[in-house]
Image (cartoon, rainbow, N blue to C red):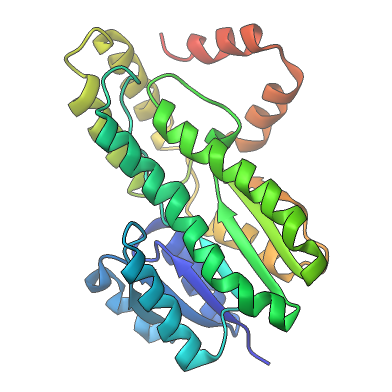
Length: 270
């Protein structure tokens, strides 16, 4: 029987690549995003575009209800919707910081709350939360973004233990750099928020470092394949990582002291 998958943030990047890959491999795929006009091309793959604003509870509820009515259940949830709000912690306005967590954390967890009852009832389900290397490693100028991804990782760990007895798996995906709108949005946000403040020198170094690696990052299908692997594993790992520098960075973070890792990180921003 075909599994039904909801992929959020499907209008671009990793979400779009994942929706296409899964549709090509026989899944019933709903691609959700605020920008439904950017998902019209997905229809040719058999993907069903659906409007979703993860910061609005009525939008989240309507999205899940529609899929339940049409497909009966959501077997796999890929919580991919997210963005990076960059700027020094001192400079980011608190409403913007809260919005970052609303999108990257609370929206994802609200979706999980709504799909879990049927998953428990069916004794089957997978919740795939798209975190980041930045869910284990915090760099300067991305504090609020990192806070959101660290939180997503902690919630995933707790949820995994809660729902395992019901036949539901929770998996974390930790992308490194990949080609998407994400990087440019983050840099634009950084320049706007901290480009003219006491942190301007650090901002310039960060932007230079970002531009240096931008050409080396792989296409988002690399992460889409990881997501598919995690979905199809009988006993999935708790975490999968991939993309530019993901594995070496996570390894170094694990074995080095905080201060030594700090020095390595800051050496890249000179």
